[in-house]
Image (cartoon, rainbow, N blue to C red; front, top):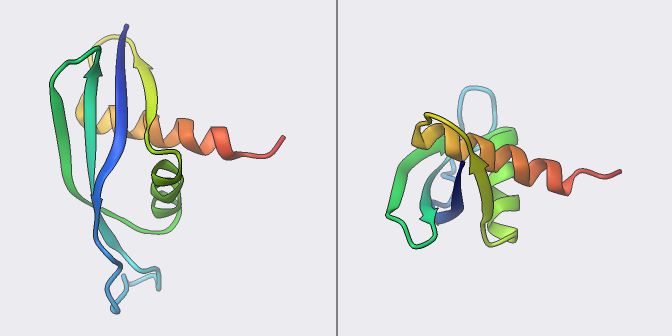
Length: 93
């Protein structure tokens, strides 16, 4: 198992124009660090809107989150796990 710390490294302000579904879209760059003191990688300029944008806001509010990953994985998979975990953390009972 490998532990990663995931955070929002940068986020663009949603533009005045929106996506076709009426939701504003913004670009987010995620920072992913393998713990302890492993390399830092970035998933740059991911376009987010709707529920994913709300999850990103929760991740910003929490100043990042740690996730445990087992086996082979991609950077996108690590980010997806982090967003799912932060959403689960903020769900009501």
